[in-house]
View 1 (cartoon, chains in turn yellow, purple):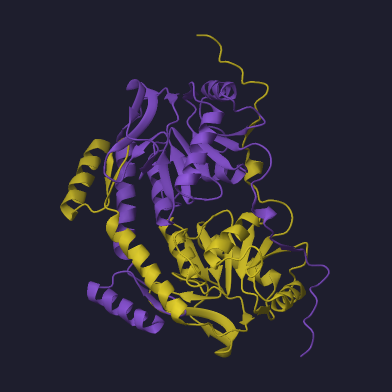
View 2 (cartoon, each protein chain N blue to C red):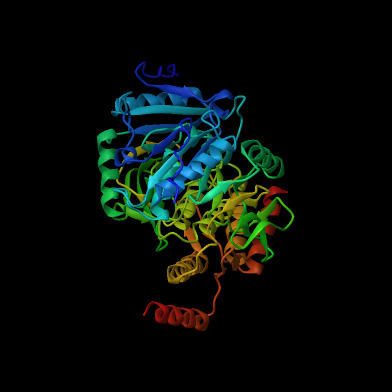
Length: 266
Length: 266
């Protein structure tokens, strides 16, 4: 047998090492915000820096949705995520203000999620649970120091005022949705479909807005429900070059298939 | 009203500009490979560099699955993707060899997808179509110069020998699957769930292996079918802080809802 050809000396080849899998050095957080009021945003940044998110801990990335990059949340957030390079990406509203909990508390809460589920992808301060209830830790116009549910609580949706994404478990937004609503639920469902989890954590902050439900929200809800209902009902068979995947096998079909497989393995 | 607080001079704030959205300078491709035979891999790199994927066009990133990072495809590929920084990521098998088509042809085929669908996420040389057929452009032990379907063809699955991912439309693998099989179908389904598309393109190369269907493949198929069947049947209602999303509304429920919305908007 001839010796294997040497790789071209011109080729830039890099074999991954255990070190390459380590976290990047530098700040832990990219704090990303869609901005349409720069004074509000400046106050938000001020409250974060006062809460321990100084330059050694965080970078702040903003997208002015009223400027020449005018866009909605489903267009703007992917741009923010693409620009964010740190271990955790915080997506947060310009009218969020930190209270007593700062960077050290947030890092501790996220480390707790590492222990609970190595596949966790998202964390927030308010959201729905699988059982149909809510888990909440917030002060907002509905009340001071709200606390609901045993935290951390696994979530099926997260309120958009404050969402942490773990870059090692990347989750993206739907490219076929639009507007400024329900992207928290979309992120959580995308995570769930990829076998990743979302959590409400005990990180107390103030949101200056009570949340808004208007016609645009109702329209977003109809679109969300329509999109996923069609997908979940419509994907039945997937042809591949090697097989046909059937996602709607009858119970008998599933049983026969597992019995055949058990025999092959036995 | 007091003047808005000035942002802390210590805070590192970056407002995204139109330039920030531009492609990174440098090579267009990160070519990523799971390697268990370094001679095979060296021959693959050699054929790519001969085909125009020199250092000004491509970086090569490898993960030795037999070394101290021992892992399967569902664990290894996310590590490769995390290390890849270029505009396009090529996931390809170590036993792929380029033929007459090189970097210029691949760039032209991908530019064609940009025109067909701004949301395209994945491209390969073989896969299943929504109609249940196959689209193929390959030479392998099953035949020389195979060509099937009108290319480019929209795909519901892609063969793992060669898959291009567009980093501007990031798609991840399921965290809850394992092994070396069906990650092409998983990527395509994850893309579809996020409103993104996959395509078989006319990029002709040689794959030295005919593909393998063994008990591990059958097991992977059962797991794939089980995972998605459960998800699609199981996600019915999602509670959020503002509403309850219902993905299984009856037709009458959908109709009533749309009528109410039309009135609100009217």
